[in-house]
Image 1 (cartoon, rainbow, N blue to C red):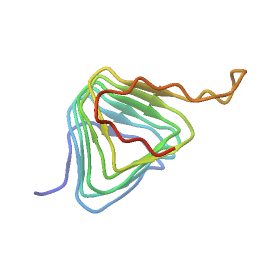
Image 2: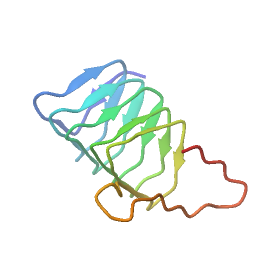
Image 3: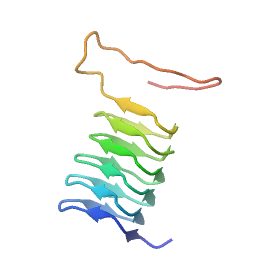
Length: 119
């Protein structure tokens, strides 16, 4: 696979390795991309995002402030949290948000059968 950018990479984006960005996707400043990875159509990534190797991000996904690596995000997802998420599969229309600003603090999960979670 050869790297390509069909979307828009704004200034101050650090990119290395094989990075593929599809149409109508915007990569905002302060984002680091480490391939191999692919980002689908109509996505918005950044600011302050790290997308690491072996990551595939489906269409219409928004990632802000998070670090993701070695994962598949199926698409139509929102990830807005100051956390590192690795080795994961995120299903369509999933939302991961930071609960640090809400009280009482805690994690909320909806977990399917035979799931394994490490927090």
